[in-house]
Structure formats: C-alpha cells, structure tokens
Length: 389
Image 1 (tube, helix red, strand yellow):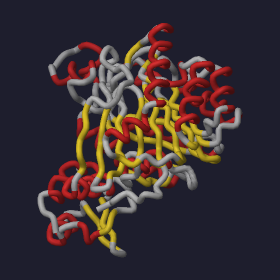
Image 2 (image 1 turned 60 degrees about the vertical axis):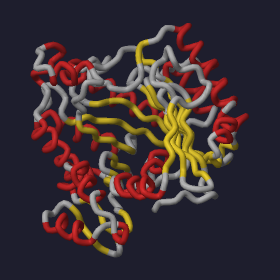
Image 3 (image 1 turned 45 degrees about the vertical axis):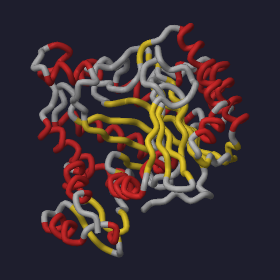
Image 4 (image 1 turned 135 degrees about the vertical axis):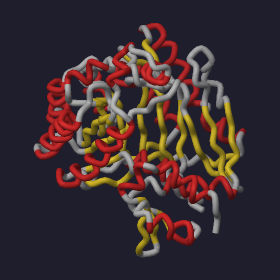
C-alpha cells in the first residue's frame, strides 16, 4: 500500500508566494507583493517553521528530523533578499537536521535571480535551480505575461551552470497561445542544445491547465477574447505536442521518469519523487501541503491558501489517510512514475483491458502507463480505482 517507512527522511517545501508579475495561466496561490508584505511574510514563515514539531505532535504524526531535500517554490522565491533567505535557512536548520549533500532547490524566473541572491543561496546550500521558462519562443512568452525572451532564458541557464549550480531545470508548457507544432519543436530543440552543452539537466513538460482558477482559464471557458484566449491551442494539439516531447526528449539525453518530468542521467528531482512515492514531507507557508506517518495510517494537512488568512499558526485543513485512501494514492501517484507500480495491487482484468487498448504495459511484476496512457492518465486512474483486487 505504499506505507512510509519510519526511517524515511523528510522533504521540506517552503512556499514563497510572490512574483514580479502574475502570469495569465497561473492558478497558484501567489501574487505580486511589495517589500513590506514580503518581510511580514518571512517573519510569519520562520515562526511557523519553529512550530512544525508542535503541529506534528498535535496531529499524532511522526516527524523525521533528518532532511534530505528542501524545495523553495512559489511564486518566485529568488525575489527574496539575501538576509531574508538567511533567516529562513536559520529557522530550518534550528528545527531540522539538513543532511550534507541534501538536494536544495530554488525556483526562479529567468532574469530575476540577482548575483547577490544567487551567491547567498549557494552559500546556504542551494544546489539546484528550477526556472519557469514555459517557452523559448518570444511571442508565446509575451502572450501569457512572461517578462523574458527565449534568448534571455538560454543565457540564464548557461549563467547558472557557469556560476556552479549543479542542477539547472526548466519548465515548458504545451498548449500556450499561438503555439504551433513548429514553435514547440523550436523550444524542444533549444532545450536539447542546452543539454548537449551540459547546461540544462532537467525538464518538466506540462499541459496548459484551463480552469477557473486562472485569468486565462476563465477567459477561455467564458468564450472571451481578452489576454489572447482565442489563440490558445486546442486540447488535441496540446496532447499532440506533449506526445512529441515524449518522443523527442529521450534522444536528446532527457530520459522520461514521470508523466511530466525528464532528466539527464543522475538528475531526477529527489524532492518531487517523495510526492509520487508517498514519502514524508512537510510544507510551510501559504497553501503548503504536508504528509506524515502516524501509528496507524498517515495524515495530510494544508495551510490556508489566502495571504490575508495565513498566520503561520498551523494547518487549515486536516485529512486522515486510512487503508483505502493509501491504496488509491499508491495507484494514482505511483503510476505517474514511468517505472510503474507492483502489478499485484491492481485488478488483473482491468489491467488486461487497458493493455489491449495500448494504454498500459505489464512486465517483470510491474504495471505502468504507455505514452498514450499518460495523455489520458486521469481516466485510467478512475478505471483502476473502480475495482480493487
């Protein structure tokens, strides 16, 4: 059932929900904040970090002290001042034992990580930077409110590697306004060129989400014409672009290891694997989520998702994870990984039908999704979870 082992080391996610400008497709709990707002937030965040052990104890959860991954996400955490970053790290090191060689990731927007911030981050242990590129094509970047060009993104990736950042990753989105098969190929080829020069080591490829939680999503769903909504790629084209990436990237040194993630050998995201493998992790800050083991089962909890409500006092919602929930999580999280899961967990007849439809594969005691299956993964998860062996 994917039960966590007591010896599992902890991952810590630190939410920094501020951006220089909010992209039209963004559906995260983030926004544009001034210096005073960011300073207040950092103070509250540090106070929450200090109280994490109390929160875990109150929920009856086991909190490993050894930490082997830390992930600063957002938002754009690189907008923090060096002194603010120092305070957050001091709080983390006071509350946890961050292991030597821990993977420590900082999300950043291209062109928005100043020399002083980068130097301080690396002194504090940051060894991985994930850049929100989204596209290497200028028109597509501009259409969704990105503040960089494709050339600036490539220069930033090279700069980070030259400065000594071991692992530099980037995000791409399939389905952006004005995106075509040709322009998508341009972004993929740029990523491949950067990998060939040992500059880019990790790539995440996401389908554009159309939902009511983003300005662009609301405009598309409402049939509006603002913020380039009519130019958004169709679902069919977006799916085709994703499949193109799955076919192209392995030949460019990016092996696919998860539905949305590709890495040069030795550079998979250790932190993100914790989510898919149901390892313990704690999230601190706005809209941060956590999962910890209990004597019986596990518990998931989450902080407030509105800045005006978040006060660092503890989770706003708590969900107990029992045997059935653990099984379901093991299936829909584990099957995101290309290596698949134990086939004995699944109903054999259902899997056989999906294999006949070329949506799943079975072999060596494992079952997983094919490339076609990854495109419709949510539907497959529904079928698999409808029957438990």
